[in-house]
Length: 366
Image (cartoon, rainbow, N blue to C red; front, side, top):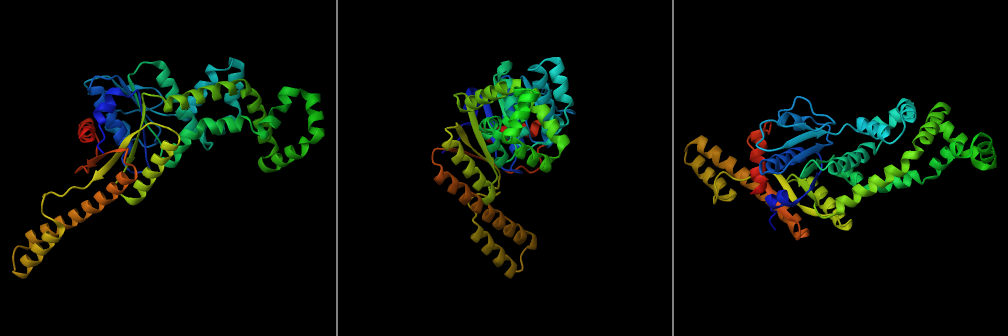
């Protein structure tokens, strides 16, 4: 089944590119964004991959949490890279008073959470995606996600956040703020002291204090976090959103792609299609591997040109690689008959500029 990329670029409002590491996902997202912009759609591309290749390919010397205009494009294209700590800081400032915001930003636990805590990047990516869509400045938002398993965290962020906010530890830590000093002592004496002592042993008394102060300061923002996360999750399932799974023609990458496609289907998420990057194609059509190898052997036996024989053997090797890759992609297609597939040929050089991205975009469109 073919994958109509140009139709997707005309109709979608949000495109989420996902896949395992090293498959060309960032390049695919950038190429889609460039092609959409040059077809007349106001586009922004957001990457949460820490690699700087997107900035280099688009000729940007700096790529950060602020959308920046890409020059050399016949259209409107902005690009940005997620800064999860800055995004978290902006949320704190926007949804709390000045004094409370200062207390949160200065809290040691918050500083650790906002820069390195597991899952923070994925949740902040959802926050930033929601912000970009809410601004209504662009016709299309293209999102480049972390490798596949992290991208699943991208989908799971709202549920994990709700579980965190409703957890017993959070309720214990909020007890001082909700109950007051003396009342809290009664609560502790009633049975929570053992839990507190255990937590203190694990993380230390000062960190526990920092954590309690952080949770108490942030409590008024919890409802907003949950609501925005749920809204973004609903947007990911809504018409106008499309997921593009990116893979290379290798067994591990296609297994990851299959896993993600199955997960999207189970979650009723809109899967637009699979992009298989760096597919090898023989230079000569119609000359099979066996025929080329046989011809090379006869040439060598007859004392013919060594260069020609070497080229025939090289062609045979490339044909064998192409046939193996085709078998793997066909296997995915049979397992997911409703998913369109687009194969993008391997480029002779790395993509490092806008012209390279245009070439990738043309190959994506077939």
